[in-house]
Amino acid sequence: MLLQIIFSLPSAGGFGRFVYQMHRVGVMSLLIITVSGLFIGLVLGLQGYSILVNVGSESMLGTMVSLTLLRELAPVVAALLFAGRAGSALTAEIGS
Image (cartoon, rainbow, N blue to C red; front, side, top):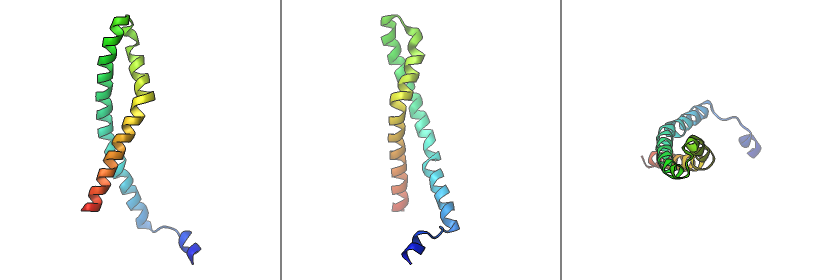
């Protein structure tokens, strides 16, 4: 009986709820992640420019910002914001 329960197909309503939760948690988090990435990129560009002017290589600003964002900051910031947004949304849903 246990194996029958484990290997039984999920109900049709379960998949709809899964898609709803994925949309609510994932897609609804894109706006806050995009806006925060934009502001982080702006700050990184301003600070990087002031440093690169002293060295005389202002032309490398775009490369520095893109590599720094893609390799270091973007994954960490996106993960933290996504976890915070998803956690608070799920907690609010449980509480209501």
